[in-house]
Image (cartoon, rainbow, N blue to C red; front, top):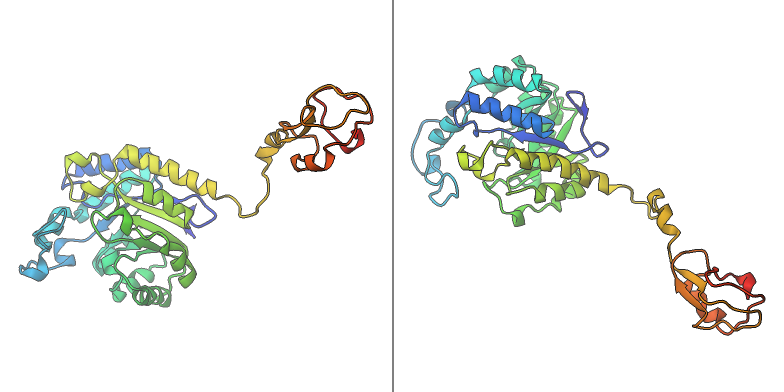
Length: 346
């Protein structure tokens, strides 16, 4: 698939998406600094989340509308209050899109209701992402799919049946370019819960490219995912984890994002080919494999022994295992030290 002119898939380097989320902390100037940092990192895309508190939930209280007290980051908070703090104001979208584009970034967003899709369409968003919690909102998926844009769907918390329903909804509404992201919808997520081995399972089950939306600390899980077929990596980004932001605790800082871009590309390059054979870079090394050499001057009639023939580097002589066959045989002619042992000498 192509996103804004860039190939995305198994035959292309990993596509790194930096998620701003609410790490702007309600400050447009900070949001712009995040855009600039993402551009400088070498990441390929900046992603936003497009909602208002009243489009993603309602202003209500009670256990259903509060996070559990034991939540690592947002314990006891009302959903409405959290989303009011974390949302990116709709009037910020245009200047953020303009700043990102002027810096050479692809910029798109996760919409959380149809009005968000309308806003993003007005801004010419080149792709969309469905968040994990919205994978069960099939009407929203159909609305996004009808735009004809490439669609990325996170699969955190979803069963295979729910994933299949989402894929069928997208395809049925006309989506031709679809990627599934493995995801553990915990904030932060434990590395041990990443279950990266499911990535090839998803790729085979749905016949789609796969990637990883990663909420673990650091870049290790994301880089490892590339070896299991991830062609898209999404990580949250912040200017400084110590500086706050609702998602800062599990976000990468700019230098870490740069490292992710470099190391995920290296991991992809390292996959290489499944053909088992020497590569051209090993040609020089092939010259220095072990073989049998004459290691002491010998005269015609001398017998091959441990004192005059050994397995050493470089190559050029008989294979080392031939020593049991040639031991005790006699040399036909005088042979100087440093000569590779060949059949015509004995």
